Image (cartoon, rainbow, N blue to C red; front, side, top):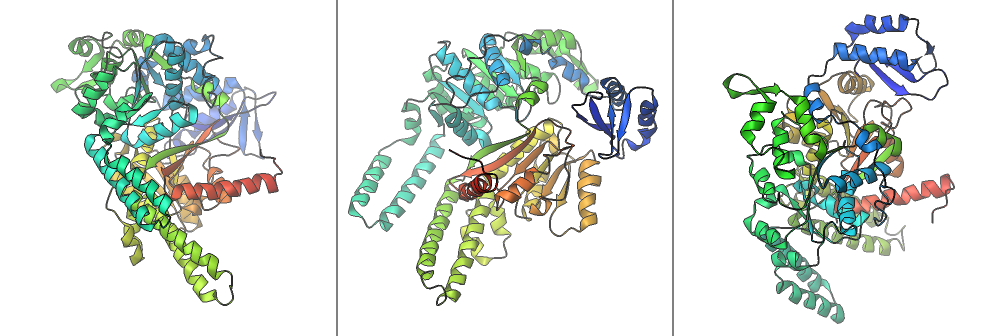
Length: 615
């Protein structure tokens, strides 16, 4: 709702705590707000929390007013995919679902898995953070256990999410997964590994260890990396949509005779004539096919036709008939809306699984912290290894000098400065090489590979998903310069969701009034302002109770600061039952070292401060 902010409360007399949401759009409707409160319905003013406590009856009046003032233009499209939650409410025999998974799924995830197995071909619709990834893993595991499938499966995702899928499969199951690379990519990866092995060989003084590395090099030189990824006993292949455009890979996959496909972010094929849609639809004869998305219709109902061309092409066998029967056309052959929505809903309902938001909110904790993984490029990995090697050498020198700290005070100070500098460079490399380019240090330029940042790609994909759900998001980075990098990257994006978007900023250069203006007048009250970029200057003193999502581009320097970051959305007056924090982690980079540092400080906080026993 736009007219009020509210929170469900536990009270014998009242059901909701509400406040008038004072914005440029709503201020002119304050009289209507006051008129509802003037009704004889039961209510009281809570002076301590500066809010009204009202009953469900009174709250429903505010809902009706809000719908009248701010009608949702997309309601007709939403009605197309609006399916009764009875599907979820009547699911039976789901308690044993997922018993073979390393981490047990929530009940709503078990229900989704059970429904997916019953339907066999379906689109799973759930908001950002509901766990569509473990649902996909669970479906394949259960299908194997129940002998519904016997062959291998394939996960298709955005390029930035392939590493995330690999990590999640390891986290939730014992399945063997493999990211599939093109032949050119395989050759590049092989060369990078061999270069690193040769560097280790030159440094190694132990003869026995030298022989081990030489044997490893012999194996590497005689291995065809491209062929090898299909030869192993793999359960799930992980590809991005663009990889399916490679004919050599498609030929390999067709010869395997896949039994299962899970298309993550399936709205990525919303245009049925796009190359990526056509590539995925080459596999529409596979036994079990699923798509996962938060937004199945992003533009108009034609998106549905494209999705079903993969999920079940028999539902809409003719594109021209679909366009005639379900699309409202304007002049010059331009689609302007939908018709026969109820009939379209009935057609697609047997293949849709919508996870009710109330089930998610009832089962998840107040704050859900999720890691999203990506990789350095091979070139960046070499530079990262060089930085970590230099840090190791500096730490060894530091240990020697610390034996006589007074005598070596000056030299120790230099060593410590060099350690801090390289730690900063390593973190900047993990975030974005642009930070190194913008650095005032000339030494930083020695650690630039001129390759793209996979973490920035991951950030953009995550932002797109969150913004498409209609939510706002706060982004944290310890580097203030990251704010300009993110802004510039968003300005170059072609997706409509980023068009005309406004961004608010918090950093150490702002005074109190400027901070207030950015957070409240801009980020909270301006409908077009969807993103708040914060340095750690924003980790305290601001209330983001209306915001549901935080993205941490890098982890904070300490557990305390990290908790302060999360505390911006974990509020007593939050309008959300569950808030989500996404931490972007670049594997085999300084991110993992930073993660260990924060985990260590968290351990101290729990055991020493709070007296919690940890096994």
